[in-house]
Length: 208
Image (cartoon, rainbow, N blue to C red):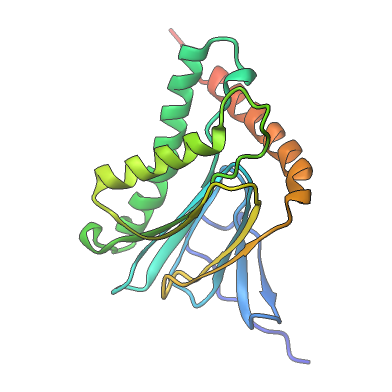
């Protein structure tokens, strides 16, 4: 069987894992927590979500779009709530700005941008803060302020989700996973959140 040639990604996305998928007959690029990916290829962008939110944004005329995957830190991971709130705002804003600005830099027009948003599951009833709800409120407010229309959404609930986004057309294949997967995803998100807090603390160092 002849090997299928996979077109190279846009500059800056060389570290995003991409592989051919026989089921969908397309290349699939995987976006992990804290990452984003932009493409104008006929491919799918994949991610898996728990409390995290993914914003799928695209320019339907140009056929270019991308997906990000972010999670705002929880209160229990840092004793200084006011400082952590600052972390959350900066981190959430960065996740959205990187995606939107990347699409605009590639030629997309802000007035044409559309969005679909997914995730924000309530992973545990015992959490001090419903971080899924915080992510949902953040992404909706951000897109509203940017004037970007939300075409569709699948948010909240007890289900982890798998998302496949086609940046050329804006179409999304969505699968709700069994709530039995929650425990596994909670552990993955806990590791991810600790990295966010550590990275933000490292960035507080000032050089004179």
